[in-house]
Length: 137
Ligand code: GCU
Ligand code: CA
Image (cartoon, rainbow, N blue to C red; front, side, top):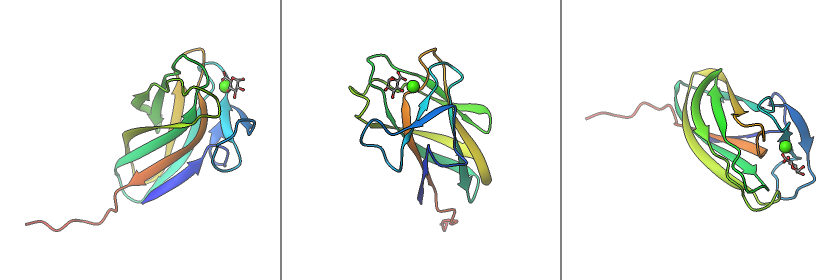
């Protein structure tokens, strides 16, 4: 099943402002992180069982310079994403990655690694496997 977590919806945290001045976002706005390595977006993600999850991050980067970030799951870097320019701030794109989740509540933080900070972040989609044991043999 896939669950959408909007960047503007608590318990998500946006170290920056929730904006809606660029069109095309989902929900009521997006996270405009502060332009620096401290400007993160964090989601609280629930998983019914421990395992690998597929994450899709929707973002816009209206500059021509990539804005790379670490993806920290429960405080540990689990992936890195480049977040290249999308051509305009109202042009959104999606990055897909896989990370491990534990059963229950998890934090997934997009932590920028350059002084430019994050792109604008719209939402995180999380797809977990069904958790149903598969028959063997
Ligand atoms: C512009 C744009 C913001 C964006 C910012 C940035 O100010 O309007 O939406 O977040 O650039 O460079 O991060
Ligand atoms: Ca910004």
